[in-house]
Length: 209
Ligand code: AMP
Image (spheres, rainbow, N blue to C red):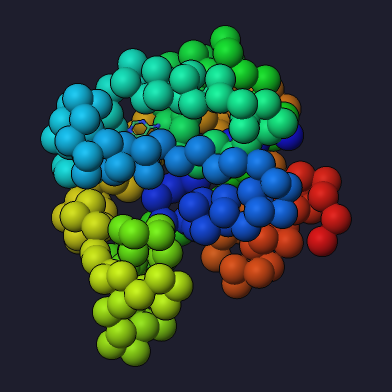
């Protein structure tokens, strides 16, 4: 099954994508993770992306389209995948349609107010990708899964969060109509508890709980 996770930053796409991928035995393709790894390694793609990512702006379509086209050609994607954070613009969706058959698009909905609270309190482990909220960490600064240091992503700082939400509404939200018109859109309430959200996604995908 080839699935897209749509939704604003902070909606829980990454967290839910990991769980769905584990359940279905397919890979999670996160363009944000791929770009952050490239930035950390200082590759040409990483260097080109850094200025945009740091400001909360979208990396040019051609860069991310090439990344995804190449990734989806890999052997492990032939039985299906979850795209997390791609496409984010209508031109990206149009490009994707030329090299992928998408079965379902899950739109995880959360209010801007809740997103701001979630993103500015988010702490991540750069070693294993674990994600936490400060309200649940009780002062801990190390990852509970691997023990590495937790950090606040530069683009989760307050002013960048506002700009990312603005970018989402202007450039990514139009994809809701785009995929709805193609009969692929399934909307899930992302404000509900994590386990309920997961159950709603499985049900939207026609999978058993
Ligand atoms: P994310 O981890 O999905 O929130 O992505 C972090 C940042 O990576 C975004 O704010 C963008 O700067 C960049 N990015 C990730 N995916 C895309 C995409 N599909 N198109 C353009 N930029 C992207």
